[in-house]
Length: 324
Image 1 (cartoon, rainbow, N blue to C red):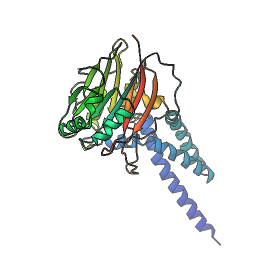
Image 2 (cartoon, helix red, strand yellow):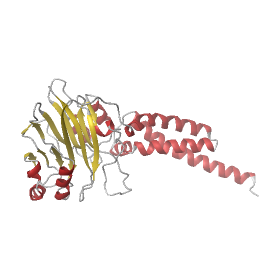
Image 3 (cartoon, one colour):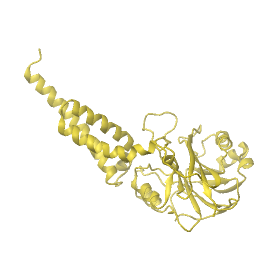
Image 4 (cartoon, rainbow, N blue to C red):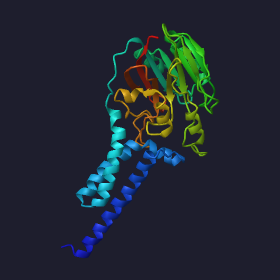
């Protein structure tokens, strides 16, 4: 028979563990809700918002079942606020029927040229990609892509390939003209005007410096702030690539507020992770690769594609560019 003192000790221990877990969830929640990307640890925490949201719901319900009313009520209320921000990504948004030209854009981080070129070209063919935005494009990778037949399906190009992880490029089914769409950045971000029949399309291969480097997230914040806003009277514009940011990071949310939509979010695939690929459980998979589409373009489809050799999954979106 358990005596009263032992029961009290167990109750105190349970309460202590619940409080510690609740504090961790609440700190993560307020980091997201207040838009604080101050340190690399905060940025990493914000990227895990969907996980903390689920943990908050479970923890809140558990605390209420154990009659820890204060802990359970506060945790569950905050978790519900997060659910309201995160859950809509899993459901498609209503959108009009597109009238214009369908375009398919694919973005792929090639992991310093280690991705299998044949797999990249196969994905381009399978999804009938019109424009391919590449990050971490190396000279060796360019040669591998040529041998794999990329030129046969996407003959036009604007490549800024470099050794290491700083190169990028755009390959297209249609003619392209180089465009400078960002201020100088640590990693190169190729921009181009794609000569679509009927209406031009600006495409940027996005790749800000990762925020979790030892120097902190300042460069990442500057790179995100340098991405071009949507211009109402300008060409239709698409930003595609490895943003090193999720939909919970304030820099990406500010960019979306200028007139872009996230293709994954629009189609109910906003919680599909893109990094790291390969089924790894640590670090927890997150969605940091995106296709941001001018909100004048109805998004028809979005999918993620495994690319052997890369630690990122490619993202593919089909949308309609309206006639002028």
